[in-house]
Length: 237
Image (tube, rainbow, N blue to C red; front, side, top):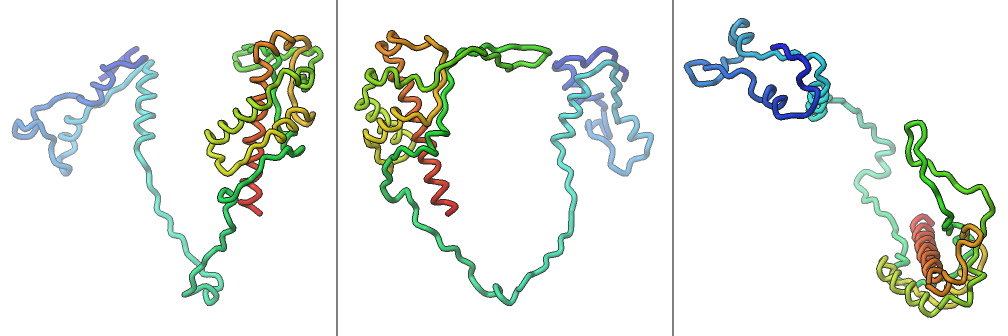
């Protein structure tokens, strides 16, 4: 069966060609094929061959079918025992250190953790050039760093501490103790990176609560990195 310009797109006809083929009466009108040891000319008669020209979808269809068929290869691997006399018959155990999550940990303002906190609020423009997407064009002009210090009087540290406590429960940091002093020290510090255009945030944003929201984002990011550093320290040391 020769097909021209058929199978260039997805459709039920292609599936029916592979699924049905040519219906034969079969041996004894049973619609069944002959046995595996049937003569060659009988096998050729009950085998359908489909040839497609400009049938890109048929090629993709066949390639997907080939992916679903697993090919297994058996390898024989020789196992050699090293110093069998030292471990044979013994039970190997590992001494587990105490889990720090079972003990209370106070949030502290650490400069090495603050330096990993970064928030870029500058305007960005997505550009598609040369067929590639997700390129970003940034303003080459000047920008402000850590502008929260200019609006420190508009930040409610009590509300910020309460938000941090809610966040640590949401993240499952139940053994973490959040103190207002640590929150205030982190925001007032200059180790974190906060980028914005000149004039992007002013008095109107401070009054509307945007500055408060930005401070909350920084604190949440710091809490995640602080807790991750504790987890790494107690897991690998």
